[in-house]
Amino acid sequence: MLQKKGFAVNIFRIMQNKKTSASKNMPFALHLEPAVDADKSDRKFVATLAKGLDLLRVFQAQIGPLGNKELVALTGYPKATVSRMTYTLVKTGYLRQRRDGKFEISARVLSLGYPLLVSQRMRHICHDYMAEIASMGNYTLGLAVQDGPSMVYIDECTGSSLNKLRLDIGARIEIVRSAVGRAWLSAIDEQQRTEFYQQLAPVYGDEWSALLPRIKQSLAEIRARGFCLVDREWRNDTRGVAVPLISTDGQTVMAMNCAAPVYGVSNETLVEDIGPRLVHTANNLSLLIGT
Image (cartoon, rainbow, N blue to C red; front, side, top):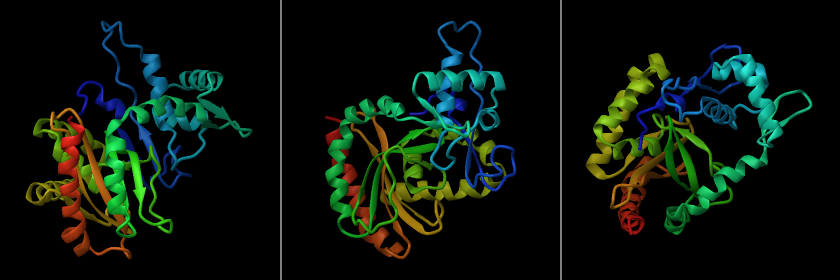
């Protein structure tokens, strides 16, 4: 579920074709909001740790290696703060410095996420169900959880080795433009969804007025038939359907999607066949996850 306090820490500004100092050479850059200033009376909150973790989250596959100057522009943190953090993260093994002076995520970061993946019991429960649907065609199925304005994949199945639509575990996808993100939005309560919209509106700026009606249309589809279809919004060569996946006790909220290249599947197939299969699968899985 959404964390009301400190949610701005998790908000990425998605900058496309904007000539900022950090993004002019990046076709797709993610801008991280500065960390929320902790209440000075909150002596338990370690701001430096929060900023260090946020800095690690800036490193995305779409961006590549980053230098201190770019990290300053992306995070909004002072140059001296960024320099100290990158120095410390290199010393502790979580960043690797290249010969050109820029930084990359090191393999040690995997040690932070791997125990979570192993402990995610639902991954093991869902995998065979997803693989069965994926094997029916040139489909990619994914299981995702929410993190800020993104869905993060914790499992993935592909029906064909020739399928170019492959998303590694840990890959991020926008909530607002994707079927899997909108399916997750349908599973949270109205108050949380409203707060989420309020956080996202300034992130997307002028685009928000066009995005919000499409999001609401997807939510209406889920209410009517249990799944939503998103056609060429996330990527112009991809379409897919998705369903919310909620445990019977309501404590686990995820989403599952099936996507394919536009040349590999029609909207009719997704709506009449794959979508209903996902709904049936999600209903069965919700019972298993909640036990």
